[in-house]
Amino acid sequence: MQVTIFRPFSDEQARLLVNLHQRYESWIEVERERRELPYDLRKKTINGQYYLYRITDRSGNGKSLGRWSVKRDAEFTAYHARKAELKDRAARLRTILAESAALYRALRLPLLSSDAGPILRECDRRQLLGSHLLVVGTNAISAYMVEANGVVPLPDETEDFDLAWVAADDDTSGRAVWDMLKAVDPTFTVNSERDFQARNAKAYEVELLVAPSRSHSLGPADQPRPMALPEQEWLLFGRPVDRVTGCAIMLE
Image 1 (spheres, rainbow, N blue to C red):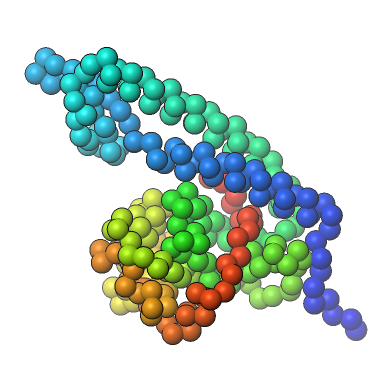
Image 2 (cartoon, rainbow, N blue to C red; image 1 turned 180 degrees about the vertical axis):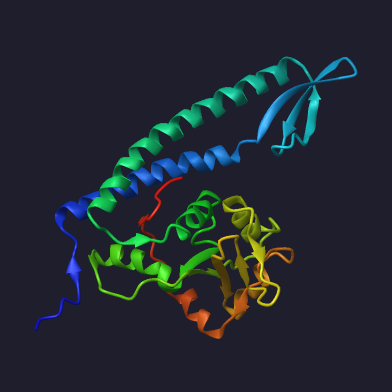
């Protein structure tokens, strides 16, 4: 009996992967630009005077940018015009990307779990992938298959998500990993018995690993605290695989 060890992607599958990559890159660039914008700019009245405020969160907290003036009015107008433009572009690109996502599933290409996908997208939106974080373990298998241009029969991925912290320089943002996880799901909490592990309300676990030589670079206030493993050192000498794959839920 002949056992199939490797099945190359068909021409149709290979074309879809190229198109998906291009469409995803266009979409994520817009998402990154949207994230760089202030949460909001608002005109407020204080003691009978108008001020421009930079709002930082949905609760309305913010900081005054100064009394209203011609300059502040132009800043306010330009911000809202840019915000609306990017929102419209993101929506159009999202629709196009969703078309590729539907075809991706129809062609039975390798899928990432529905829980891991949103975490990876948020990492990418914050430009943490490659520079600060790498996907390790079974969740990386779908990317390896795309890199190899074919399917390799393997066991299913585990029901957790392993990330390796690889930043060489100290992270000055303070809570890069924790803020990312909370943006994906505010129910994430750190496991008090295993502080390298975060868990959400659905009991989905994210574990943070690190090579001992890079353990210094994670911000002291960040969470979870990575588990230092000597075997993670070999990752630092390899070439990371950078591929776009689908997940069970492509976009929320």
